Image (cartoon, rainbow, N blue to C red; front, side, top):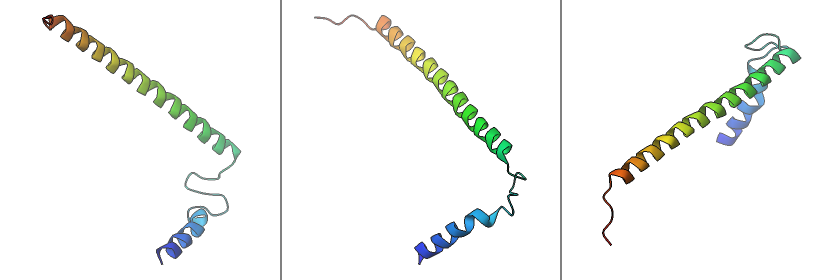
Length: 78
């Protein structure tokens, strides 16, 4: 029963928000698709860059804290 309902929703999905090529954005042509694809690529490039910068900062902070702990830790008795 649930499978039939899911199949019905999936069958009607392409025509749900578009009539004759006009969707939520307006008339969809090659220019709109191209700019959308460029925006998706730019988003992921910026996302990777920002996440890498965050990771670099966290790694340097971890190293500073590790060095500080080693400096403050008394030498081990052997």
